[in-house]
Length: 162
Image 1 (cartoon, one colour):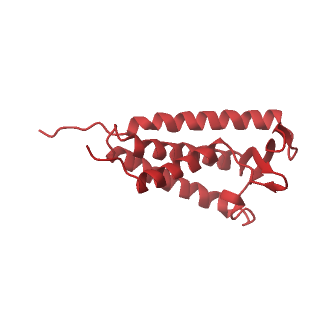
Image 2 (tube, rainbow, N blue to C red; image 1 turned 30 degrees about the horizontal axis):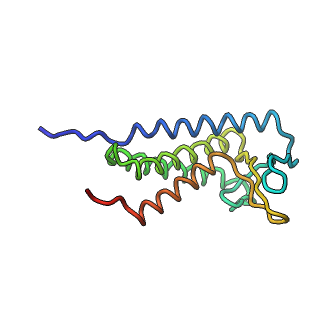
Image 3 (cartoon, rainbow, N blue to C red; image 1 turned 30 degrees about the vertical axis):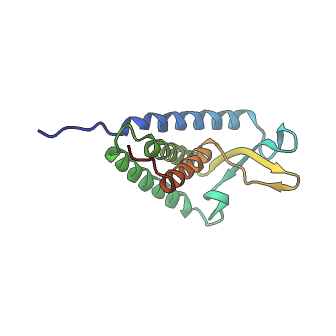
C-alpha cells in the first residue's frame, strides 16, 4: 500500500486571503479615492494615488491596444496552474516553497479579476523620495513581488538537510 504524504495545497487558503484583501482594498480605492490625486499617508514618502494600469509591471505593454488584457490573463492562469500543480507535489511542511507559491498565485489572480472586471488593474500605493516616484502598485503586486523574492531567496539559500 502506498503511503500518502500530505501536500501543500492547503496553502491555497493564503492565496484566497490575498485575493480577498486585494479586492477589498481596491473596492475602497474605487469608492473613496479620487482619480490621479495624491493623498499623503507619510509626507514626502508615501501617497494613496488611484491610477490604472492596462499593462504589467512598470506599465509594460500598457499602450498595446487591448490584446494585452487577454495575454496577461492567460499568462497569469498558466503560471497559477503550474504553481498549483507544484504545490500538489510539495510536502505540506515545506513552507519555504509553499508560502511564495501561494503569494504569487493570490496576487496574480487578484490582478486577473481586475483585468476581467475593469479592463485594467487598479493601483493605489505610491512611494516616492523627493522627485523620484516608484510606479504605483497594489496589494496583489506586493504579494507577487514578495512571492518572487521568496522563490529566489529560498532557491539560492535552501534549507539545511537534517
